Amino acid sequence: MGTTVFASQALRAVAATCPFRVAVINDEISQDFDHACSVTAHDFGLEWIELRSMWKKNVTALDANELAEAERILAKYNLRVTDIASPLFKVDWPGAPLSKLSEKRDQFHADTDFKEQDALLEHCIEIVKTFSTERLRCFDFWRLDDVKPYRAAINDKLREAAKRCAKDKVLLVIENEMACNTATGAEGAAVLAAVTEPNFMINWDPGNEATFPDSVPYPKGYELLPKHRIGHCHAKSAVRKADGKYEWAPVGQGVVDWVGQLRALKRDGYRHAVSLETHWRGAGTEEASTRISMAGLKDALAKAGTGC
Image (cartoon, rainbow, N blue to C red; front, side):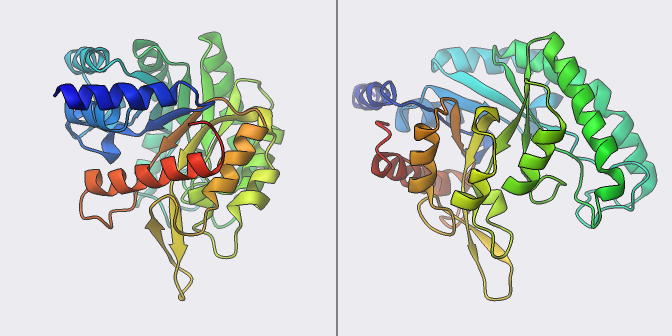
C-alpha cells in the first residue's frame, strides 16, 4: 500500500505541472465507484474525474443516500469533479421524423422524453452544485437525416437551457456526438455561432468526429472551433474499416492525431479538462482497456510537450 501511495503522489506531482485537468470518466473503469476512484487517484495519479454513471445508475438517477456516498468516496481519494456527463437532450426532437439513431421507436415516447427534459435540467443543475463543479454536459437530440427544418427551434431550446444554467453560474457544454445533430467540428462551430450565450460551450470530442468517413478531426475540425468556447474535451480514438464503418481504438492509435491536438490545445490557451472516454474494449474489460488507453493518453501528452 505504501508503494502505491508513493507512486500516486509522484504521478500527482507531475500532474501539477500540467496545463490541463487530465481526467477519466468513472464508468470507463468500473461501475464500482470506490474502485474507479481508487484507480483514478492511485494508479493514474489524477486529481480529476468525470461523473457519468455508478452502481449501474446514471448520475442523474442517484438518490440522496447514493449522492452522499459518492461525495464521501470522492473526498476519500481527494478527487475533484470536472463536470457532470448528463444525458440532457439525448432524446428525439418532437414533431420530427423519428431518428434512425433513437433509442425509442415511437412518437409517444419521443414527446414524453422531450417534456421531461426541463425537469432533468433542473435536477442536473442541483447535481452540479452537489459535486462542486461548474460544467454540465448536454447534447442536441438524436440525429435527423435533415435537421434544417428544426435547427432554429433546437437552437432556441439550447439557448433557453444556457440562460437557465447561467442563473446558477453553470456552464452548459454540448458534446459533438455522432448520434446527435451536432457531431463534427463544423457543426459545433455552427451551433456556437447561433447560440451565443457566453456560458454555452462545446465539449470537443475528436474521436466522435473520427467516426465519419474522410473527416479530419484535427486539424480540420478543430480549426473551425472558436477556441475560447471549448469548455471540455473528451479523449478517445477510432479506426476506419474498408466498409466505411468504424471501431473504437485506444488513444495513440487510429485516426485522431492526439499529439497534434494536445499541442494545439496548449498553444491556444485551453486550460480545462482532457477526460479519457475509452469506449474501446479491445483488452477485454472496461478497466483493462482504459488502463491501456490512459497510457496512450499520457504518452501523447508527453510527446506534445505539455508538461503533463
